[in-house]
Amino acid sequence: LRSEDEVRDMLEREENLITEILNELIGDLQVPLPNVDAEYQPPDLLFPAHLIGLCVIKMFQYNLARRIDRLLMSAIAKVQKKTAAFESDYTSAFWLSNVFELLSIIKTSMTEHQSSTHEYADSERAMNDGMQYLETLLSDIYFGWIKDLQKRFGKLIIPGVVESEALPGFTASDSGFFNRLMGTGPRESTVKIENVLSFFNHIWRTMEFYYVDRAIMRQIMSELLCNIGVTAFNNIIMRRNFCSWKRGMQIQYNLTRIEEWCKTHAVADATRNLDRLLQLVKLLQLQKATDQDIDIMFEVCDLLNPGQIKKLLSIYAVSDYENPIVGLVMNEVTKRAMPSEKVDKILLDTNDLNDQVLYLTARKVPAIETYIPPEYGMPRIRALVDSQTDMAYDDDDDEDDLEDDVDADNVVPADYSDYATYGQLKHQV
Image (cartoon, rainbow, N blue to C red):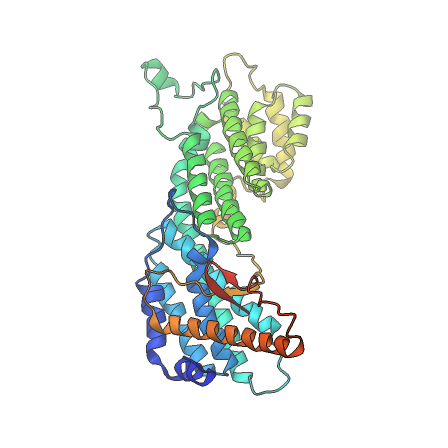
């Protein structure tokens, strides 16, 4: 492709160009896997978004509205099919990142495009429609992956956060009277708080490797913490064997480990999803013998409603070394709970795990990377990339000739520092 006319002709008429994108760039693409022996840069992992974005923007420059529609709708459908099964965290993270990048590329190009005529009306409509469909695809991948993560992670919450006893010297003897009488106890779970943190590390490193947008990374971790907050809270407040002082100490220690992990990974704000759970666990550790203790409970646990405080105290397992909760204390708690007893909900709403909203803003993409991994053929896309490279060099040669005409003794070599990245030319969006 040596001229703009040939470039336009390929973009407008070459059906195999779209077939090449759908098959080689999406359908048959093997997602690169994390490898400690190889260091991947953004172009190595975001090349599908940038190459599709290059084709779309060139189609827009030539006002090819129908081809924009055809390419974007076909590509979106292909990615949707590729990610629908959620068989791998790597596949989900890879395409989540690439779809967001493609959305950002198109949004950046449209933000910088200013048209004062109606000549580009159809193409602008095609680009705007494409952005809406990309947002829908991004949402589908995000929530589908979140649902899969929550399903797998949910199996770790009770044994890893509530039952795990990593704090020495505070082993909870909550196996029940019958088991203690028979000299048996519950089997120690093989799931520990370390398994919960390992799950966090796996998801975080996967998202980092595929350059998932930071805002999306923080929101995914917030979803997982919300899962902990709701699931653990509802199990503790309904199960007597979880309601003891020692059990409270163990859960507090496990939650502290989680908070430390969040601070280390700059997602400390997401721990707000644990606030009610933390207060419930704090309630297990407070004194419960006097009127003054009651005042402290209601003051410290201000996120809990009176019905929840009453429920936990009613099933609290008093240890041998603790004073029993006397009737006067329970009567006072019951009295405080009565005015709102009909409206207070004991359990946290599990819909909080399902009714989430994806908050994100497309980033500004300063340039399109034209890197193509050497193992990929894609002759038509390579021809398009090479044609843009050749034209850019021709433009620079023209500028050099102009400088020669002005001052033959002051020749300044062309500066390609703004373009040469990873051995390929970058085209300004």
